[in-house]
Amino acid sequence: MKKKFLVPALAAAIVGGGVAGSLVNSSAFASSNDSKSVEVTGQQEQQQLAKEATITKQEAISAALKDVAGKATNTELEDENGTVVYGVSVTDNKGKQQDVKVDAKTGKVLKVEADDKEEGEKGEKAEKEGKESEAADQQEQQQLAKSAKITADESNAIALKEVPGKVTNTELQDENGTAVYGVEITDDQGKAHDVKVDAKTGKVLNVGTDDENESESGSEEE
Image 1 (cartoon, rainbow, N blue to C red):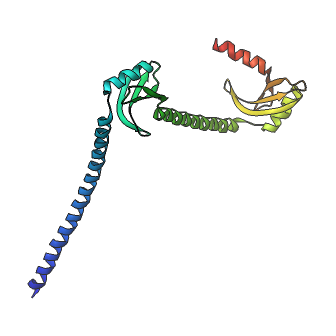
Image 2 (tube, rainbow, N blue to C red):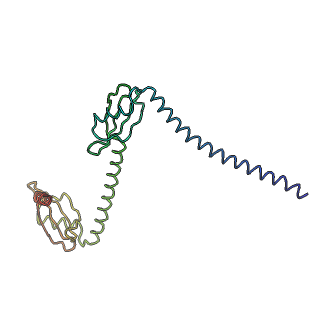
Image 3 (cartoon, rainbow, N blue to C red):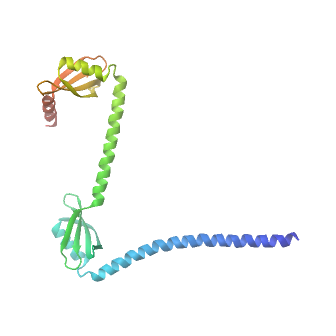
């Protein structure tokens, strides 16, 4: 009797396993077919566009390079608002990527524009560097704040005794290894001054004008 019950159970297990296996295989097969269909569609589109083109790929590259001197890195047939064109990617003599659209029937250059992808990557890089720089500045300010013994308001009061006027900006700075408050003051005559106040002792270390600072900066660059 036990054997009679075991046989159907075993059969169900085999059938179940077969069904599961079939489902897995079907899923894999469908996924494979999807990727192939996309590839085939791309190929079919290129073949269809190629039928309408009357100039060759090389002729399109030659036309593009006459307009933008450099090196062609990629060429592909495209549908540009109903017009069949060759999209020729050119790296110009300055190393900048240019996307040149050449009419696939007439060979006429229709448009030249900077490669959006490259510009986007540059923008992302600049944004990332900006955030990193901002984070570094914040860390530096926090580190300098630990060294300071007087507050920003106290440094402003000390600086205003030295140069009467209006405080426009106060910032902790590292002045040759010494934590100082850089206090910017506009005096009664409208002239800007930069007063350095020791963040530990409250002593005025230096008083200069923005014109002097810019002059010193220019001398260092020379």
